Every structure is written in C-alpha cells, then in structure tokens.
Image (tube, rainbow, N blue to C red; front, side):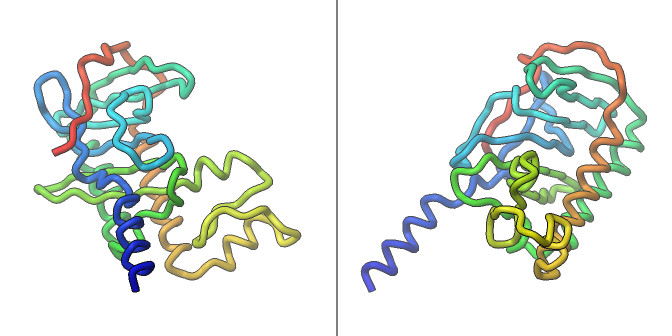
Length: 199
C-alpha cells in the first residue's frame, strides 16, 4: 500500500505544468488570446521567449519567431476579427477533445503547448509528438514513442485508438489555424516587450 501511495505522490509531483496558468503579457500588461510555444524537458515552467512560436492579441497584434534557431521576434497588426476567427477555431478544436486527453507527452520530453483563451476560459493542448516526428525512424503514438516498424508511420498512427487520432486531428487543425496568422514579413520587435508569467 505504501508503494502505491508513493508512486501516486511521485506522479503528482511530476505532473505537467498547468499551461493554462501561464500567461503571455505584452508591454501594456495585456494577455495574449492565443499562443504556441515549446517548453524543454521536465514540463518545468520556462519564461524564456526564445521558445515562443506565435502569439496573438485581441487588438490584432501578432508576434512570431521566424527562425527556430534565433530568438528574435517579428510583429504585425491584422484585422482583430481575423484573430477572433483563428482563436475560436483553435479553442473549438481543443474543446472537442475530452479534458483528460488534451495533453499527451512523456515526462522529461520537450513539449509544445497550444493555448487559447475566450470569454474568460482558457483551454490547452500539450504534446511532444512534433519533436519526435522530426526523426523519421520514430513515431509518437498514444502510449509514447516507438520505432517505426514495417507497417510505416501512417499505418501505425491509423491503428491508434480513435481518441488519440481525434487528438492528433484536433492538434493539426489548431496548428494550421495559428500558422495562417503568420505573414511573410513583419517588423522586428523587442523581446523585452513580452513576458510569460504564472498566475
């Protein structure tokens, strides 16, 4: 019995950062309505903006990192209605997934977080599969990462339970929606204008 309790406590201590409590603020103190970023292994909170991929505010501001290897950011203003449309698409793609299935990442893996806030409610996707997918010899499935076998990656994913396939479909929808906000050009902006905090 003591062993079971110890394992439960260990799992709780290693639980992922509740990214819905992480807020991206601009220089005015306004919170982003959506953002995507990478967090290093261990699910620890990481306030560095060099891991930010894209973020948007309700006033139409879009900030993104054009080069994954460089920490500099770019900024542009778009129609606020466009931000709302994309935010809603991301929010609804997360909302369709059962809460217990919205984060899929082994402990100590690099995790990508997708966060969308609407009408005071924040929803979060978290997954490590994009990082593993960079290696063609591995595939991320519902139970973790495994080597691609003779069936091939697509067939292995197709054999996953429907809940995991729905998660991956929702993730792809959210990622594509966010990518549609990123233009080819933008104005360089100060990284110091933005900060992550935990509320």
